[in-house]
Image (cartoon, rainbow, N blue to C red; front, top):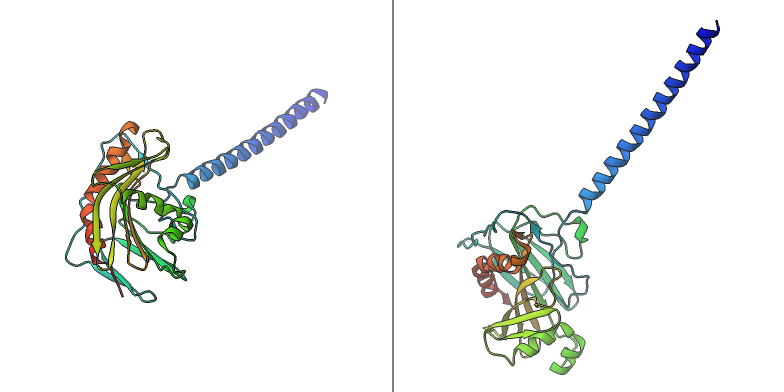
Length: 270
């Protein structure tokens, strides 16, 4: 009887040990699943926006890979979509296969965004943005009325983002303005209806090689200092070599330059 009792005791302890081990294994598997899920949720891209809009701005995050940069063909066809924003009387055309426009309006203005990938509502958390198209391109149009009747000096004081524009007015086409973080290159003077201004490229300066940043901008004002701003942003860019990131962004921007210019030319404001 004693040997049998001892055997039974060993068997009971073994069974209990096995149960504890299985329980710990299940908890470990659950923790691992939660960890993987959390990591997947955070691996998303962000999208930039025009300064001056009363909402947080986000910047775009590149995709990296070993393949060389794939440049999309610009989408320029006769059958573009026509969109009209009724409140401020702004209308423009954009490519038929593009997404949007996403509209964000406030008392003095409106912001409209279109893109070759999904367009998210302005202010969407960067972690909630998921881009499926590499080397995509987004264009944001912003029209802001000078309802306060600011002079140029007041405008510069109240809208610091315009300081780059005012400074570039004193440069020639092809010349650049460089600071600690930004490099801005004037491309050309531009007139559109009653608006006049500049087109220029903004990117990082050599002393600020941190987060990738490359945009094409058109900034225009009419005689009342109503502002029309258009920004083109390469997004989710395939970068084969980190040292060559600026070239990759430039190539995607230049591939979409014809779309950008045609969209700008299509803008009408009543």
